[in-house]
Image (cartoon, rainbow, N blue to C red; front, side, top):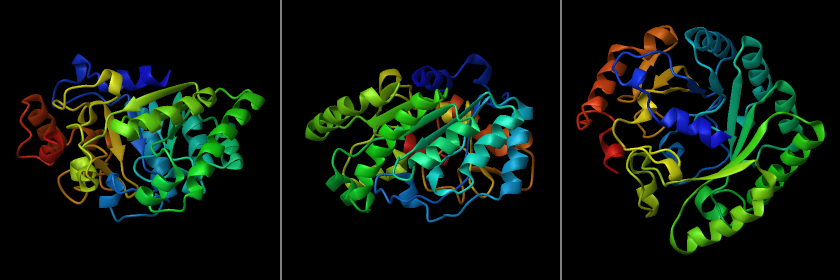
Length: 308
């Protein structure tokens, strides 16, 4: 189940509790920075970049990742991957390279049945829908898009289950939701009960800090990136800088997916200028990991997030 894979990443094993470490088990690679939502609580609201990754760069990087020992490849990062025309080809190439597990998270609105089936045919192992709006009206207000997108996302999730089962594809289908409190939380729990029959597993997430993005809409976030609600980790050391790599669409190796510091403090290396293996244990990354291990990130780009 997806929760077991998530927990295996967020629980930092002993071999990773050093500044210089082996290649991560998992990597998320941003084939596109474009998203069709404009959510005020998402880190994407702090990033103005858009556009797709260069195909040649993608091909080179996934081979380096596989050679380094990465086992799980997420073909997404901050953008909505279903807006990228060559998403199925990206999945197929990753499977051809030899990744045993290729996964994808989507807001669902662009995951129409034809596109989903193409991804299933390409060998996708896991498709997760992020369901964080209890009504079409809330989606329109927070994501700043037509309320019609809410209905389409739910319909696409249900269609994905029909396609998966009818075609006997092996892809797991999952959903996650932010565990809001109060009336918002009650409405979300009711919606989740409606969608549970269409996924193999649903799990709850705390409201992440995202370096202040969520504070802008008046929601109180959890510090750091604590993982699933039912298996939350301490904010320091943060698993994101030890056990999972994050690559932006323009080839930057970032420390994590939070914050607006991708033009500075969170960039560990430019993969257009060096190999993944060199970048993963760059001087900048080792210094950041050392600060996490010392539980003092006050002088790093992680300071605001860890204290959220």
